Length: 331
Image 1 (cartoon, rainbow, N blue to C red):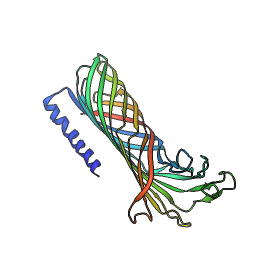
Image 2: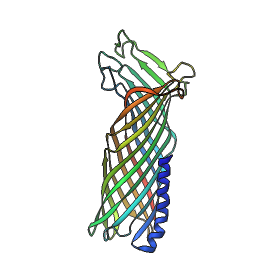
Image 3: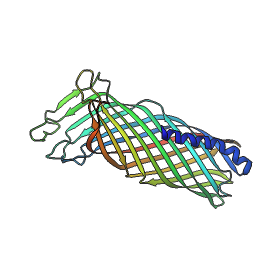
Image 4: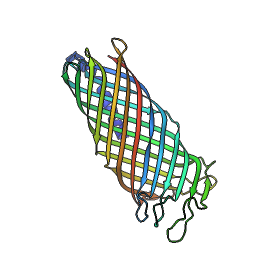
């Protein structure tokens, strides 16, 4: 909640900035940009091994396939960026529409003998909440009569929450001393239909990233812009809950991880078209990728009861393509 309040302060600042700036400098413009778009990709939940042979102990992939979103982009920037340098800032809010978003796949490698897959399950993935908040600020410099460059810093907060419902599982036969038969050798098969939610998972991300963008225009009108961000300053807190089923006894266990580090990269491209004196239509596409974020994991059982205990090392990641259509209204 403190992070959300942090971004609310920036909203207030940006809403007040145009009136203040308009009095001081007519060369700045404030814009409101309603946006609609779609997410494609997935988030990753990772558990690292301690004494098993696999590279990972567990990997859960939560799909975000064709999740539509709506939101708002607010910008304060130089009115003629190819003629004059100046400060700029922007706040983007994207909220995903809850609903089915593909599958959740859960894979485990529990053998101490080899790195073969031992457990596999697939479930219907339901996106319960998807929120992205991005605040950026920097300076814009003209470098040609039709070009400008913008170094900036971006601060991002993301919140994802999913439920894995129903589905099925295939589990290799467990042999003696931590060994397993091949998963296709008379495995145990289990149906989770009728369970409802089998696993729930949430991630909260926060990162600070430097970036740069290059804009190209004609007669002072922005036509295209490419951008790139990269940072190791990544933080993630996640929560995993394996439910107790209605028809069968589940694990009824809760995992909480505190993760940091890794790498975040995000290339982006924007194409704009004037639609009037005060209107622009823009198409914006970007790919956000995070990998290598890891840290200590803790668990407790039953869910919500007792103290957390150390449970090894965990990780998280994501790969999300975002495509949006924006209507830019200049005030």
